[in-house]
View 1: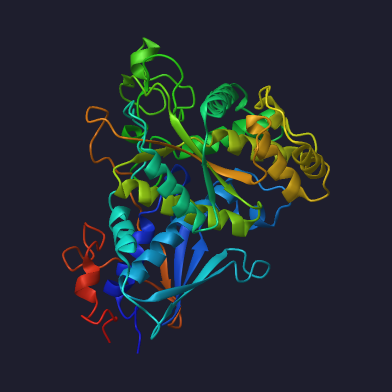
View 2: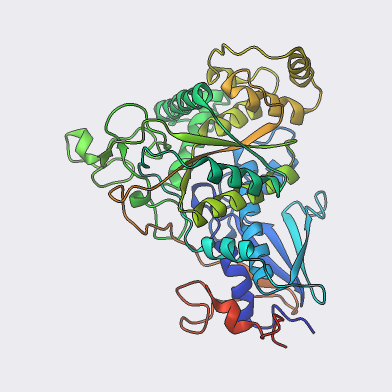
Length: 456
């Protein structure tokens, strides 16, 4: 009988790769529930240790106008789901996945994964390479080489995303420059929001909502003791000149080398300066619609593309703050969104069919259609009708750019075994038993029999 979750060793062998997925501000908004000997559930867990964090997941998921947290939580969990699927595949078995199996009764249940026995086959060489890349991938906010990523690699990333029903497209010339402008404008809005952050409880204006969002971001920035959030060392440098192609997680606060007073700002310690690549390469990930299932698909598409890039020596970071502010503005005012403050003038003309679709979406009674319209127009008029979910910066890392093996910390996972009454949490096995510091990497060979099946 198939028993992939017979003990803590095997449980962590399957789940540990999922824990290595990227997540918004390293919030790691996932938990796992083992409900049968061959079935596991991926659940949303908003906030450190399962406590309520920024954006209550259950409320946001049911809201007609959710802000950025629910969408980005789901994308993060989708990335973890892709890693979990690969972990099952390297053991020679097939995962059968159901997305949002009970959206109304149990909105925190994101996916149910059944490990199918008797129909498995050995993982392909590509699947094995992607699995190995899980342990190498990390978000790189340091400067990249000026050498462009080869076109063949970008095509492979596009194909990888397409396998998960995500559409990854290179932002050429003017679109890339426009996104850098919009991203810098979003950083500026967040930096200025600190001036109005003193009294947000009674103020329901959009500026107050923006200040609250900035405060929530600050909770996850420059911290590492809890295993959540982005440590100061991971924030990367500021540009020596010009506009930075990475996010300003310091939220406009100066470091001690910039205040002249020796007082540390957000992300204490000297803030380094560096020259970034002259022409950043940006990829935008789209989905057909903008519902929770699309967010989960976007996460899986993003992660498969990132692992493909990692396996070919390409690093990546994210530049998504304009989308967050657009979602936040739409939450405040679904009809007349403040996101227009982010949108710059566009010299691009659209075909008549695009204009007709735009008008239909802009005036639709569906908040999903209107929200997608707002996010699509952050770049002005574009030839794409799908909904953007993520922007990824890619490039070859420079040898002198930053710490060579920087990794964001990982918190103790929330794994519940519901096969017992009452359910109990599954602690991590001691190091040195196959699921130690390497996170179980390579343990598949030790845990699986020669025929590729799980041990009895």
